[in-house]
Image 1 (cartoon, helix red, strand yellow):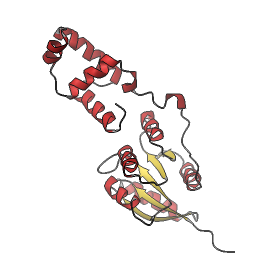
Image 2 (spheres, one colour):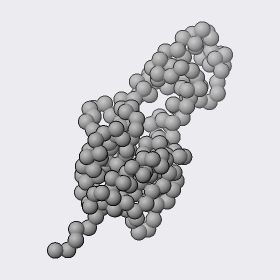
Image 3 (cartoon, helix red, strand yellow):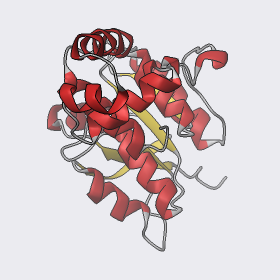
Image 4 (cartoon, rainbow, N blue to C red):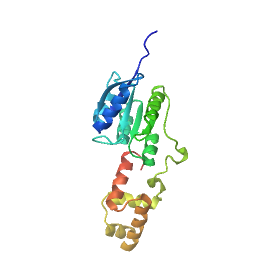
Length: 211
C-alpha cells in the first residue's frame, strides 16, 4: 500500500519555546510534517502568498512579533490570500475568539488545552472542516463598539480627530461638564480608563472595517 501523505504544518509564533514544543509534538505524530516557522506576521504573509503552497495548514499564535493574528487575517483578506489557519491562543479573552470567527478562521484552540485538542483541530481543518470552541453565534458581533449609540460614536470619532473637551462643548452647544459626563459613560461602555485608550480601540476597530 502506498504511504499515506502527511499534512504539512507551518507555524507562525513569536515565542521560540512554543515553536520548539509544537515542533517536538508534531515530529512524534505520523500524520504531520513541520515544514517551517516564522515569528513575524509579515513573514507569514510572504509564505502564504507563495505561488506554490508551502503548507497545507498553519498554526498561528495570537501575538506575533509585529502584529496580532487578527491583523494577519485581515491582511490576507485584503490580499486575497487563502490558507487554512488554526489560531493557537494563550489568551482566554472571548473577544479574540469572536474576532477570529468574524474573520473566517477555520480552527481555534488554546495553548493550555490538552495537546490532543490541538491535533484533533488540525486534522479537522486539514480535512476541510471548521473546528472552534463553543460560541453563541448570535453574539459574534456583540462588541463594546456595537453597543454605542449614534451620538456616542460621533463623540468617539471627534475624539479620534483630536478635539478637546472645550472644542466639543463649543461646537455642540453643551457645557464642558456635560461633555465630561458623556465621556465617562463612553469610557464605561468601552471598558477603558481614558481618552487615549478609547481612541486606540476606535482606531483598531476602524482598521478592521467595523466602524
